[in-house]
Length: 146
Image 1 (tube, rainbow, N blue to C red):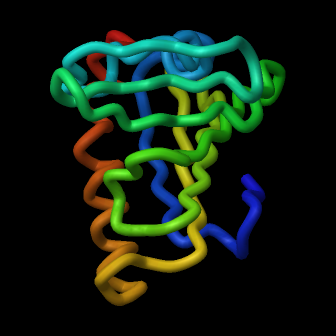
Image 2: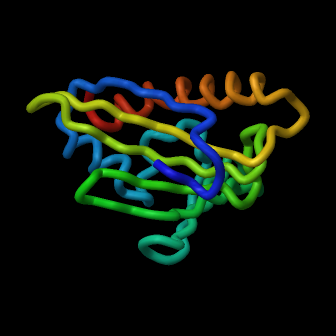
């Protein structure tokens, strides 16, 4: 979970009632945006680490995420948001890891780092990013069939 910055600023865990492999099929595929709400359309550039996904929330504005690392064996994916980061922080770097907790259950650990918050305190940034992750969890559950 180590990113290019200090220790994780936000660390969220969530338990799912699907196998770790089922959840990994959704989150480990950087081109799968089925769990991200409000995406108008999307485009992809490249493959594997370094790949970019452009998520358009409207017809013209794209949030660009970059796949930084992908480890299928350990079910870990890391990404950054180098362009149009909607979160109130600079140099955002996130890691998602899926741990098997049973035959049909798993735990997602989602953490991130950043260099500095924008226009708010560190505590407010932590609250904002934590709430953002929370807003995405229902979509992840639905996409995974949980």
